[in-house]
Image (cartoon, rainbow, N blue to C red; front, side):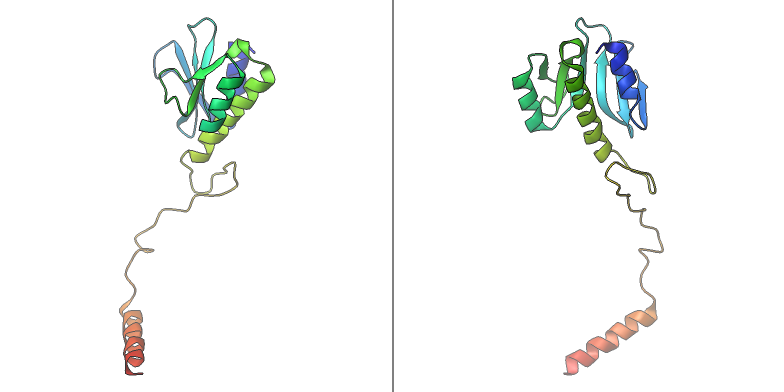
Length: 150
């Protein structure tokens, strides 16, 4: 896989956006406003940072010399991967894993589809947090008085 294939594969993921917030040499891929991949455009060999489960990150670093702790990232949760040094199937799995981790934790909008099929609860409104009417409060007080007599 080369840089162009990597970019196309990342952009093929649902709701993925790309940008260059760190300058013209780093391409960032986001889902739900959160980064799941960063690709350096000026390094040889081409590298990318991918989010990863901490245990899997250690395993991948042991298996492949092209996978190292994330450069300029939290080394526990990110790996730096040489794009052209890994089998395409393995690199796609790493991209998928990174995307899934971030998509699950990205802000969800009420009614928006998410990978797990769950929906975010709508925010609490003034009516849902309002105090109960006085009639209900009086009824509860009457019940409490009756219980106290028994």
